[in-house]
Image: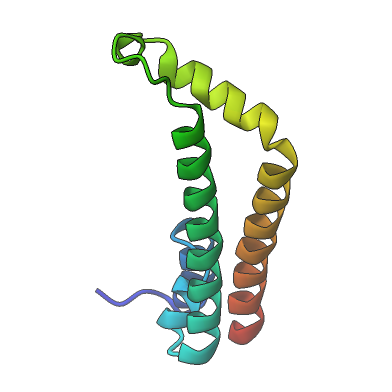
Length: 111
């Protein structure tokens, strides 16, 4: 099924907006910008996951019975968020800027 030209023009923008940074650039066959956006996103997410894992391991209780507490994951999440609020704010800002940059880049390349 063929899509109208206006729909095809929006496809990369929608891919960047809904799938993630770099997806629209891949659809446009612009592999350089796609690689930069995808790699940067994966690095930022890797740093985020590593930080959360490290903080979780530092705060895990040593008592085996405490691990059965159903509230423990929520308590740990709250502690980690409060202790690293600045880090999470900057990571969120960086990921949002990257996401918006991917959308705008895909849109500008379609023009």
